[in-house]
Structure formats: structure tokens, C-alpha cells
Image 1 (cartoon, helix red, strand yellow):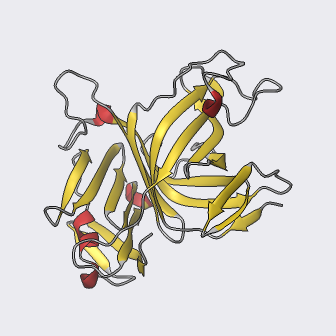
Image 2: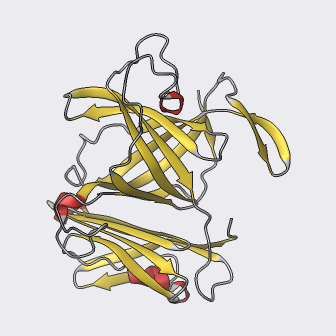
Amino acid sequence: MATPLPPSAGISIRDYFYPIPYHPLPPGTPVPYSTGVPDVNPLNLSPTPFEPTSTLVLTSPTGTFVDLRVLRPILPGEAELPNEPGSSHRLQWAFAGKSSSFAIEGAAPIGRRRHDGEEGEVFPTHSVWSHWVDSKFPVGSPDVPVDEGDMYPMPDGRTLEHGFSFNEGFGRNTSYEEMWSDVDIAPCGNEDMAVIVVLRIQKDASNIRGVIVRVGQYCQGLLKHGDTTTAERWEFDETGGKWKRTVKIGSLFLPCAAAFKPEDLAVGAKVSFTDYHWFVEELVEVHGD
């Protein structure tokens, strides 16, 4: 049985997505694959990984996360990121839930990395992301597919994810690789320590679910009400000393601003707007990275 690893808070940005149109992979296919192209490319795939989205994942200390993936400009004259109600065509995917990681029993080391002044072997791990709310599926749908992958620490400090998922274009499961960079968690403004906040709303009888996660200088929220999806991303601007919304998709209200004033919050407290009632699930301070 896989050994669970303790969850940790994080800010992760996807650097690229690399599709591999096979699952399972042909025998002898190297994994990771994308890090070897173009020099090592036995499947004769694209020699260049690419990133069609702006993808950011925020994860709390208990593993609660919000993953927001926004397509780069599609039509002439579009902004780099959509920041007005609407723009649903720019939402590639958004989902939130709980993540967990496990040691892979018997896994061979994939290299050595210096960490905290000491050099040691590094091993791949296995991660699972449960989708509690998903922009592509109705609230509470049992059809949300399993989302999991093997995580390979890279020598440059990034992490490569190798997994498989259902590919709508092929009509079947295919493999993929994603490269992720971690961002240091930082306090904002006059805060002495970095703040992490999780807000949640659940009213399944009305087909309502939503999660807001703030990790340090970033905040993302996802709200699904029936077929309507609303997603936001905020970032603290150190120059101006204010929070700025950088992504807005959908027309519903998200109380992200409540997470910017942790002094007014407490675990279990309710944040209400009309008939939408959000509850503070996590409120912690952590040392910045």
C-alpha cells in the first residue's frame, strides 16, 4: 500500500503541457518523456512543449486546492487574461477539491538534489486530486474522472507530472506531461507572516458548490450554481499595496475580498452575500518560503 505523505501549502504555476497520444505507453518509452525532446524522441512527437493557458494552483496546508486554467487570447484584440464578467470561452478548466500525495513503494531514485545544505536522493511520488467542484461537470456528478499522476522532481527545482486523462479529441484516454514551478509564499503589505484562508459554500439541494483559497499573495475562487460557473484570480500588488483582480469569468459574486482581511475572520465564521453563505474552513499563518 502506498504511504501517504503530509500535505503542504503551495503556489504552483504550470510551465507547459505536453500531450502524448498513447495510453498505455508503448514498451520502452522513457518517462519523463518531454524533458528529453528533441534529442530523445522515439515516438516522433512534437519537439517543443507548449503552454496554451495561464494555469495556477493554490493549495492549503490540509490539501484543499483551487486549480484555474485560462486560455491565452483566442480572438483578435482580447486581453492577455479575461477580467470582466462573461468570457466563458476563455475558461479551459477550473476545479477544486482535495489533493493527496503518496510515496511510491519500491520506486527507484531519479537523481540527487541538494536540499537544505545536504545532498540526497530524490524519488518520484504519486498525487491524487479529487474534484469536489468542476467546471465541466454538474455539482455532485459521479462522472468526474480520476485525476492523478506521478510527480518527478527535476534538477532545476521544478516538478514534472506524468499521468493520463480522457482526451475529448481522441475519444479515449491518452497520456500527458505537465511541468510545474513553485512560487514562494509571501506575506502581503503589513502582514508579518503569510496568510492562508479557505472559504467553502455547499448547498447541494440548489446545485451550489464553491471554494476560495488564498495562499499568501494569491487568491482564487470557483463557484458553480447549476450550469453557471464563475471563477476569479487575485494577486497582491506590492508596488501599489493593493489586491488586484487579474481574472474574472462568469457573472456570480465571489467574496474573495473577505480573505484579504484575515483579522476579520475566524474558523467557522460565515461570510454571506444575498442567499450565498460561505464558511471559513481554514485560517492559518505560515512562514514565507
